[in-house]
Image (tube, rainbow, N blue to C red; front, side, top):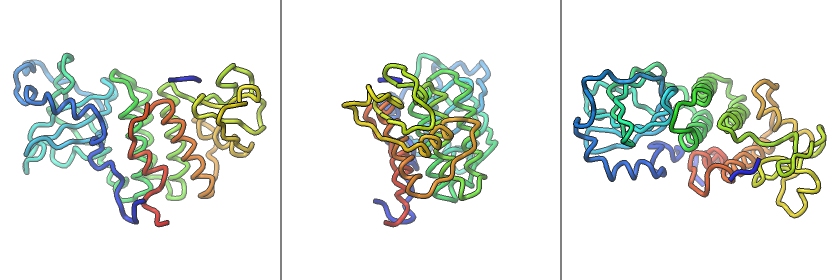
Length: 296
């Protein structure tokens, strides 16, 4: 495929989960006209869709701009008017990574929609109570935010929802490998699966159970001819099988020690930055990759 140290207890830089996105800045520059009900057809019922809160940005004294992954409408930004008031109808529902049913008034000529209500179905407080779980979940949420389309994409939404549920309830010892699998599965569902059985440059079949010359820049494994002169990471057969299992949705999960887990985190982060990030900052991915909450 070719496409173009924090101390212990530090929370990952995703609390607002939106400070590094360009979209909220553009939205805030044009927010004034959205605070008025003019332009919204209040006579029409809102559109309802399953949704996950991927980020929130305070606006003014009483409102929030929320970034939503929706099952039926793709990634959307919406104004939750009055969300910060003590008796807001939103209550505590607009928490990072919580899931529910969003009621949206849509106007397709605008970047910012109006969130009329959010019926909470899962607060996912178990993620916030544990840094390894939260780190993996926030990394997955950041990938969904940055790279999911602005139109309906049920497969990526369902994977995101399932990943958050699994990470909240999985045994502690499984969090590392589950996070890796869910991240690889998400980029694959979005159309960026790495080439592991054929050369990413010329399509030459790559023999199984042999070392894999993996190029993040080229999008996967390279044959011996194409690997010459390219920066590659050579994966031993056992590491190649582990990567194949992570990308698969059905293979048995591999077992890692910390050294191998760190290598696989770095490999995924390099792949992501080459093919999707386009040089943009990804603080949640960086925090997850470096395990910044672990004392050195």
